[in-house]
Amino acid sequence: MLARKELPPEFVEWNKQWGAPYGHRSARLIAEGKRPVQRPAQAVADPANPDYGPFAFQHASGTRVHEYPWMFAAAGLEPGMRVLDVGGGLSGQQFVAAEAGCEVVNVDPSARDDYNVWTDPGYLPLSPELHQRINDTFGTDVRLIAERIQDADLEPESFDRVLCLSVLEHLDPAEAKEVIEVCARLLRPGGLMVLTVDLFLDLKPFGVLEENMWGINQDVGAAIADSGLVLETGDPRELLGFPEFDLDHVVASLPEILIAPLYPVMSQSLTLRKPQT
Image 1 (cartoon, rainbow, N blue to C red):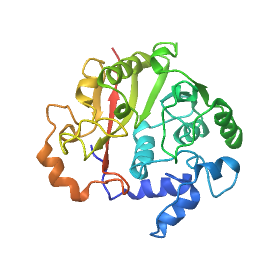
Image 2 (image 1 turned 120 degrees about the horizontal axis):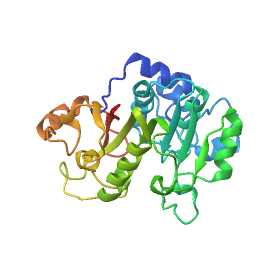
Image 3 (image 1 turned 135 degrees about the vertical axis):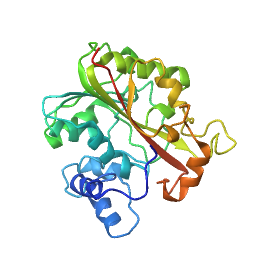
C-alpha cells in the first residue's frame, strides 16, 4: 500500500511516545502545526537530551511520519525475537526494537569508510563509534555489522523479523533482488520481512526520468518474485511491478497519499511472510 496523509490515531501516539520521525522537539513542533527542524549533529553532541530521543540522529524523509509507526505495528515485535535491520544506519527503529526486548542486528555497509557515498549535507555519517555511543545512551546493545547483507555471514533461518526501511530504491535491480533473497534465507520459517520502498513522482511511470539523486523506482514485484516469500500485507495495486499495479488508481489517489514536503516521493509499505514449509 501507499502511505496516506491521514495517520491512524495509534500512529500519532506512537510518534509522540518515541519522538518520531525527527526527535522529540520536532515531534512537538509537528503537533503544533509547525515545520520540524532536523539537527542530527546537535543530537549527537548531546544524545541524552530529552529534546532528542532515538529518532533524532538520522536525517529522514517526510514520509517517515507514517513509515516508523507502520513498521512497528506490522512487525508485531515481542521480547526475545531476533530482529535484522537491513541498512538501518543511525535510524531509531533498531534502538526501539532493542528496548522492546529484541536481539537486534543492524547490517549496514555505510559504516565503512570506503562505502559511504551519501553527500546530502543533512546526513550524519554512520560509524561504529557513533553507533555505540547511541547504544550506550539508550542502554541498548544493537550489534552493527559494517557489511552488505550479502557479505555478512549470518546464520540461515536465524531471524524472526527482517526490517528494511527505504533501502531498495537505492540499489540497482539485480542487487535489490539479491538482498530480498538473502533476507528470505535468513528468516526462520513463519518469519516476517517488513519493507518500505520509496516511489518517486519525478521518475517513470509518473515522470520522464529513469533515476534521480536518491535512486530509482524499484520494480518491487521483480525483486521479490523468486524469494519464496509471500505477500501478506500491502495493496498490489499500489506496489510497482506487481501485475495488479494500477497507475490510474495511484494517480487518482494522490490527493489522499502522503507525499514528502521537500521532495516528490511516496512510500510503499508491504510485509512478506516466509512459509512454514
